[in-house]
Image 1 (spheres, rainbow, N blue to C red):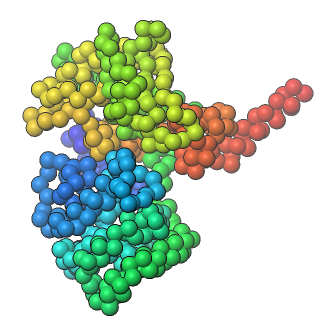
Image 2 (image 1 turned 135 degrees about the horizontal axis):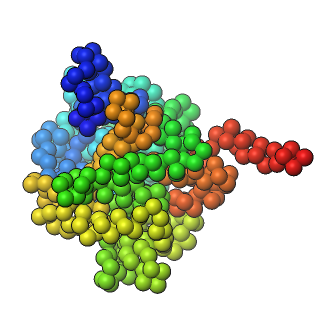
Image 3 (image 1 turned 90 degrees about the horizontal axis):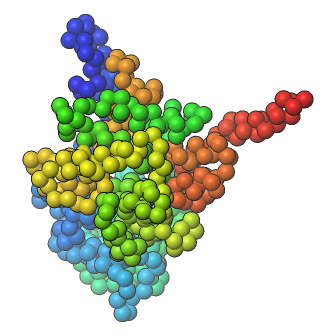
Length: 505
């Protein structure tokens, strides 16, 4: 809060001080998008169950004590663990078939979805969650084979949010995959029905007996119902989160990358004296490099935060070693006399995309805008200072050391928050202090940089294919998810070419 208050705050009238505090809280700290407000309220009621047999990546909060009423029963946890093992194993078990496999990150996402599903069923009716109140020990994976259970859940989510979103469609398709012929996990494990318990109003004793008598037919009923229901929901879905909203002032600029680069310039504008304030100075250097590397590379936040560091004079990892770690590396290239980034295709979420063609991503960083100067400064002085007494995680970007820190590595949440803090301090223009680079900008995470890059190239070239090169994806994905290329942008590009006829005349 103090960062965003003007120097003469205490001398201003009480009404003006209150207005400033309200503005900072609403615009800078919390963000003012509708989705952000919904998300903030939803986080107050954490209802998802945690599965004790899976560890931190798959549903247990690392280092945090979990309330006993948020832990799934050992039996359900074991069932989820078997499902994850089935979907993540390199080779499927003899006698089982599957369609596709999950990597660790997909598995974590799927487990989180199941955590919310069973958490809603177990949530007390009289609480703010307004769940179904099913005893946790009576929940089992076989309940996913009953259409009535799914109908209750998607309607519960619709009431909670106020409308259907694509999330409900995706969840229904996951449920359908579990009961698919030949490859569905539930379809291939009829013994899961032995642990079924009735759910009042949804699953009766008679339903359970029928399911046990003919499990394949029960799965087939769910398969047909799930496909129909997914189509019905898809017709009425609404988009709750506009990913472009926080960065609209950037995307509407003629050159979005140049506009976003002003945030990095703002970081340098307020760069502390390293001798008097070494830690804040080190954090500012890290902030500068986060923005710069994000703009140069256009990679997803996981690839950026897991980027390994190979210092000058040390032997870089081979491509095979990086593939084993599923991480990239920034290292000094003696051949090109510059810093390069090498990331194996397997490290990317869309590794099977035609963009990669099983080849690694390699980019030589340009020595522009003092980039090399700050990379060297970060590696030699700032990074060791930030790590402090913690163990070196080997990644380029590290967290600031604290007394309670045991790990200097960023995870998805902490890296997002770090980026969001940068945009709060240096991106959002504050009319009361004059700080902040861009008027109308809202705090956001690192993923928005990909929108900036794609939109910039679209505005310059009109080519979805060239825009896809900047973010290592396909033109179809850019058109659907990233580039904000409006009709007026297309018309203006065409007019610029046609107007040359009049200028020549």
